[in-house]
Amino acid sequence: MDNANPVDVFGQAGTLLQRNAASCMAAGFVYLIVNIVLAIPSFVVQTAIEDGFGLGGEPSIAEALALLGFGLTIMTVQVVVGAVLSLGLGNFALRLVDHGEADVGNLIPDVGMIPAAISAGVASSFLMTLGILACCVGVFVAYPCTLFWSFFILDRRGGGIAAIQDGVRLIRDKPGANIAFGVILMALAGINALACCYLASIVVIPFLHLSCALAYRQVFPAQPLLDQG
Image 1 (cartoon, rainbow, N blue to C red):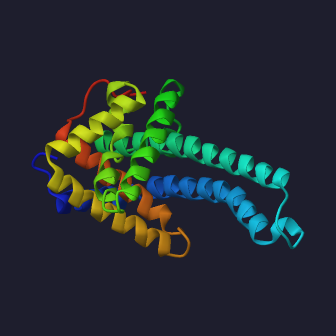
Image 2: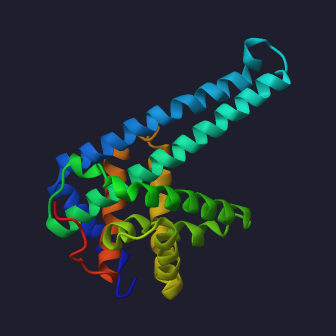
């Protein structure tokens, strides 16, 4: 981020959040509800494994395969829904940064961008997995690369893989500031996870996305390609 000061970005994000508290908290509430719904099937699978499918013993091959298929389906749905939601939150945050106002309706992305969001979401998951496998240290590099793809898609109307590549180039050009920025966001996300089972999401999630949108705009000023409708 050229000339980006994370402290300034976070301060600006806090100001925007305060001035648009109702819409930001509404967006955060939508995020919270969606993630609660997505977590229910995972809880069902975990419970089934722990109680041995209610039989008190090891599952049969058929039961194990059925559970595996169910688990993979859940993971696929979570990645797809998460990617679409991330695009919507990116749109919400970018509109608030660019125009000073946004509403919950901005969480609904352009249908034509959904395939790009899904491919970016899958690529982001792959990058994070690689980061974790790299002795977990790599995640501090991988995570910042996944922060800006929604904005690249919204601004440039490009594909998801191209958006991830743009994010990687952004981090590569100035790794120190970007990795530091990502570490701060990871810490905030971790605090959110520990704070009453993500209930703080109604404030933390809008703040994180606003911070990313502001950091993105410091490098890429507003473009007329962003849909004004």
